[in-house]
Image 1 (tube, rainbow, N blue to C red):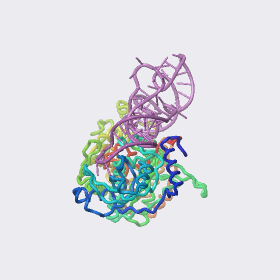
Image 2: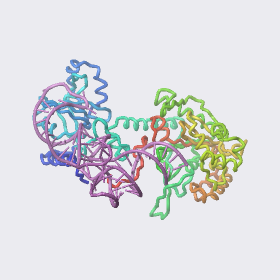
Image 3: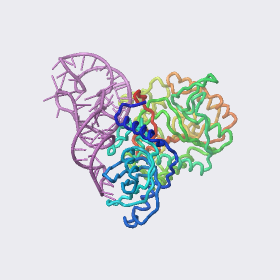
Image 4: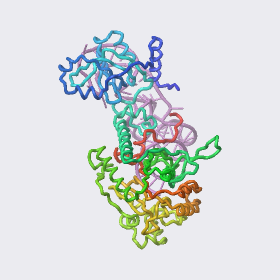
Length: 497
RNA sequence: GGGCCGGUAACUCAGUCGGUAGAGUAUCGGCCUUUUAAGCCGAGAGUCGCAGGUUCGAGUCCUGCCCGGCCCA
C-alpha cells in the first residue's frame, strides 16, 4: 500500500536509490555488543578528559530518534531496547563519502548500527563518536513529532508499535506487566502448584456467567465456544489427582468494550485440594503483600490518587452486612421484594424483575452501592448460593456459599470459594439455573454432564480462586483504563487503517 | 444503549462573526565543528472523519452516519 504522503514517497525513493547504488538495504550481519543504558550508567561520572583517554570501541544498534545537523557535525540520538544515547557523526572522523551518506540517507526512524569510542560533550552528555556506521533498516514512514510524541489515544492503540517507539513510559509499563505476571507465576510454582493448560475452545461454555464467543470446527462439524473460564477443567484435574494446579491465561467474554472490559482478558485460576476459602484469603493476602513489596518496595501503592495498603490482614465484611452498612439498605427492606423494588427505584437502580432470584437483585444493588466504596483491599464473604452455582454451601447457613470476592479501589479483583464437590447438589444447581436460561442469557444452555461425571468419581474437598490479572496490572501501574495495560486492545475496525 | 467532548498536513495543534486553509515538528534545498524541542534563509505538503442540507459562499451552521475518549446504564 503506497501512501501519497510526500515524506513517505521521498523515503521510498531513497531506498530505491540505495539499491541502485548496490547497497544491501536490509542486511542482517550487524551484531551490537553494547547497550545505551549501561554505557551511560558506567561512564556518566567520568570527566571528559578521563573519557577521552578510553580507546575502547563500543558497538550499538538502534533507531535514530533525533538528528541535528551542524555543518561538519551531525548529532543524533540512537534508541535501543534500553535507552537513548547520543551519537556524533563528525566529518573529520569519517571518509568524506561516509559522512555525506549519513547526511543524505540516514533519516529519523532508521535503524542503524554504529561503532566508535566515547566522548563527553560540553554539556556533559556521554556520546559515541562514530568511526563507522551501517544502515540496518530504512524507515519508510516518518515518526511522530519529536516533542509531543504520539498523543492520540486511538492511534496509540491502533499502532501500538509507534506508541512503544515514542513513549518510554509505555515500554516500562509493559515490562512491569511481565514482571508482575512472572512474580505471580513464581509464587504459585514455589508453593507447589502445577501450571497447566486446559482447552481454550469448549463444547459448553461453563465456569462463569457470561456470553461466549462462538466458533466453528469444520472437520468435527460442531460449534465451539471460546472459554469464559477454565474452572470446570481445572476441577477435573483436581479429580484426577493433582492437588494444586493453576492456569494463567486468556478468557473470552462476548460483552461490550469499555475502560474496564476487553473481550479477551488474562485470568489466573488456582485450585487447592484440602483447603477452604479461608485458606485462600490468607494466600491472597500473602500474594498481594509480597507483590507490593517486590514491585514498589513497600506495602502501599497509589492508585488514581488513592493510597492502598496491602498489609494483612485485610478487612472482611459479609455480603448482606455490606448491603446494609455500606449500601444503606435498611435491614427490613433487604428481604422483602416489594420494599426492595421501591428502594431500588428511589436510587434509580434498575432491577431485572423477571429474575426471581433475590440474590441477583442484591448483586445488582451491591455493584451500584457497595463496590465503589471498597477502596482498601476488602474480602466480601458469604454470597447467596443462588448466585454461586459452583460454590460449596456453608455448613451453618446452607443458603449461603463459602465464597469471597476481593475488592480493591472499587474494582472486583478476585473471586474464590470452597468448591462444591457433591455431584448431586451440583446437578441440582445446574438444573435450577437452566430453568432461568430464558431470562438470563449468561447461563450456559446445557449441563456439562462430563463435569458432573468427574465429580461423581470424587473430587477431594478443595478451594479455588480466580484473579483478574489485567485489573491487578492496572492497580500496580496506576492505569485508569484496561486498554493501557493490554498491548493490543480491541477497537472497532477502521477501513483506512 | 444514553449524555458530553473530539476527529483539520505524516505528528502536535490553531482556525474569531460563515468570506481564497494556518503554525511548529517532520520532509526537500542552502548555511553552520559541541548540538540536544539546536539555530538561520527558502520551498513543497490538505478528501478539514463521511454523506446530505441551508447559503451567493460551509473547516465553521443544521441533520444523519462512522471512529475514538470520558461519564452513565
